Length: 202
Image (cartoon, rainbow, N blue to C red; front, top):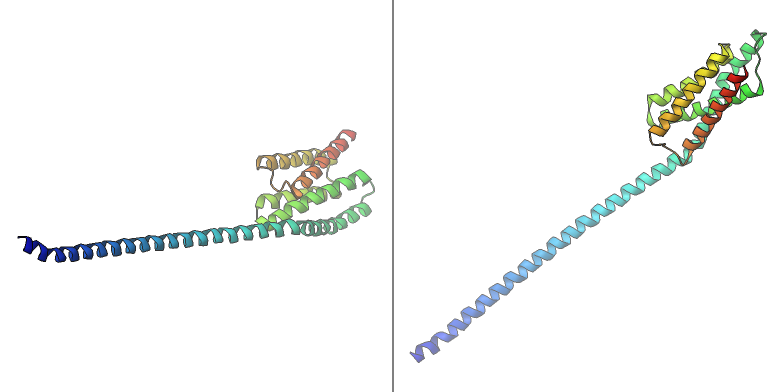
């Protein structure tokens, strides 16, 4: 019996060694697979973060371009509106003897031209029809004033129209507050005050 055990023991040892080798090799393969998955996941995360960073850079560059281009665009639209309304003023001034324009009236016209230029610029940038109608409304008010429509009526309508623009801006979250948004609302506030002065003076 002891001889049989002695003869069988090397085989048992060999089998045990084979099992250990298989187990260790299986464990190593599992560890390698785990490391590969971790590498893939880290790579995917890196690509995602890089994509987000590039996207954020693109948005910041777009905002920077938008912020740097508005003075030129609004200034150009302001000059264009001035050139467009000047002939109407000249025509009415020559044709009507009772037509009189003071420095306050010209100040109101310049304020209205500026806020009209801002709204037309926003229409060109965003395609918002509300901005288009608002800009044309201010330009139309200037034209009607120079044509000779009842001024008291225009003063009152101008005050209400401008006040609605401010309320809509506040309700919309005060967009472009750090750039031309605040400037435009200061101009509109001056426009309301000046129109109110002309309305009460008349």
